[in-house]
Length: 447
Ligand SMILES: Cc1cc2nc3c(=O)[nH]c(=O)nc-3n(C[C@H](O)[C@H](O)[C@H](O)COP(=O)(O)OP(=O)(O)OC[C@H]3O[C@@H](n4cnc5c(N)ncnc54)[C@H](O)[C@@H]3O)c2cc1C
Image 1: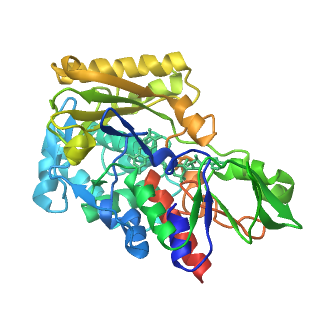
Image 2 (image 1 turned 120 degrees about the horizontal axis):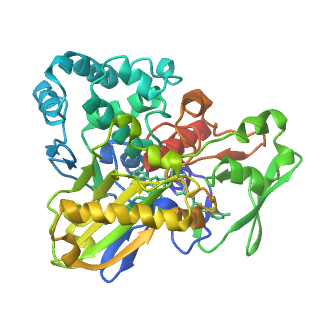
Image 3 (image 1 turned 135 degrees about the vertical axis):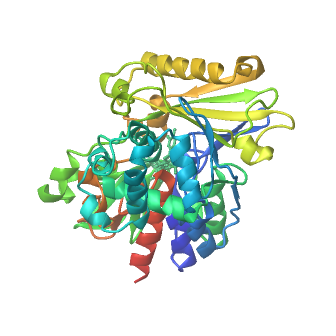
């Protein structure tokens, strides 16, 4: 939706085909009993300062952001408020103390922080595993646990798998910008505000129109076939991911050299969620970030072993504390999420969510008494939305072999066929990577 709005603003005639009756995909929202509920479990690391803000400014979208300071409550073995801005040295000392970093490790930890924030030589660090990078500065267990949990939050993979360069890129921007936030009106406002800008520029959105085929003639795109027939086009831009784009267009057009690496793509973990409508507010933080009381190396073992976590990692925004209009007066909306194994069965997904629910009830003893209703989403729901059965939260995993120059490019071997979205041509976190991808493709096409 970001790319469509940007291209329409640049003067192109744009039509978006969306198979659902709503826009936004994984970043959409729905209404229930007066609550506006995110489909996923969403917060935005760079808020208005990041790519969503940049798209909005370029297309004059009506998108307003909310930040809170402190931005988050960290819970677990330690329990403290995380400040919005951790750039001043005294805030870093506060964090080191609150995370229970051993004083003898302070020097290594401050060097680590300075290096992460410098964002220098990202490409050099792309091939390095995040865990190894961190170990080059400190073996402090509290720091390893914190970075591993933040990594799962950013990329939906553990720090044993993630690229250090990509983490450094995201961490430096998030904390330099100090704009961690949430859009007024819920996460669905991001794609909806871009859609409104698209329509104002003369573009069109066709809902309930699944693209069944990308039509190619002599290695050049000629249009798409959707439910209501053939639509000619000089250019087709796909955000359904590389694998599914190839399937829609027909693999024969791409050539073995292009296809070979696409056979070995790995994806991020799915995220499971529970949405809670509460009768009255009992959580006073904008976000709760629960770090399990487990050794850092083993926090996400359950993902590899396809088990229920001993102590679940939980990311829990309280959207109605950011924007009270998301819940009826006097009520509260809470959304809890955790990472899940890729092939997790429905039964395993629910057992993992049961453990999340138990943990929340132990952190907030009154919690269960306040629940009006709850609703769960599993990897199957995400798979139904994206038509990619893995149900990955983010997209192609941000591992050393799939970031930077090695991430799929916008260009494909087929003339006029381009890729956009979280799976193509950009860095960042989830939706922000998708908007950054739109900005870089729009700029390239404008040239
Ligand atoms: C539970 C969960 C939590 C998350 N948390 C965060 C977070 O906190 N912060 C963050 O930034 N990101 C988060 N993400 C990740 C983020 O939502 C995704 O990375 C991002 O939305 C991907 O955008 P996209 O445009 O690349 O793909 P999608 O959102 O998957 O969009 C693809 C669109 O294409 C449509 N489509 C598919 N096939 C067809 C077809 N054949 N014809 C027509 N239309 C089709 C789909 O309906 C969909 O609208 C989370 C995701 C999930 C699931």
